[in-house]
Image (cartoon, rainbow, N blue to C red; front, side, top):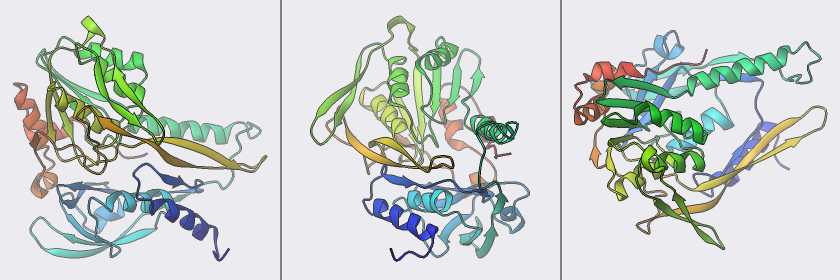
Length: 369
């Protein structure tokens, strides 16, 4: 009642859920009639926050922000592993800003303060999805969805019979697509499953992938709700599985299903997990879609946790994350030089010599068009 704007109302609602401090419970506000692109990306590596990508031609590039810069503060807030998801949620979902003030440390240890502006593109306040406008608004939505699909596609690299690398951005495939992908490498000697940046996805995709790399049925764990507990298990595909060596890569942005898969690989001693400690965000949640209006509709929603996953060792990895079998981190110098020592090291375990510069070039970051 005391709020003076729609923005304040949305912020109050969001804050109520944020204070629950639950990785999978948050408010999804109505979309805005504009897009905000900051032109750079950051990530926790170990216990420090680094710039990991800068878009060519962006204001961030113009102001001198570079890969490998360590972020000390963002508008006065210090990013860390506990606060990072809240910062990302605030700036990217709840309340996009026209810019931000950064305090950074360059790889040569010099400190700088940078005011980096975002690119804000105004769109329509009302979208006509009835087709009465000759379908122009509908086509715009289709093009945007195609662009999202391009950025979120699964990518691969092949090295003869020795190695197949699967860059998996999300657990978002139907069963038959998981099977089709596994068929690409089923007869290879080794698989590197790159789950870095993979925030999770569908439980069905997780179980199907597990079914394709184990020669026996696997109990992932127990789904624990308030009033019930039930097992989660994957049934092996038998002689259709991949029997070779499995190497899994994770980082601080690997969450949910990605973490569960990595932990199952560890617990069942099926392969090796390499990289950085994962996000520790494995609660199971449900998305509740809502909308206001009739002829003019405003969609919004909320994600609400409904269960925890207790692994086969009787432990939850919520807030804990998966600790890699071997911790391998990119340094500020690696980021600045566009090297990927983690993938290069993983390839060496599969008997493939892959220079870190070439490893980084296999799956380059792609920006929204």
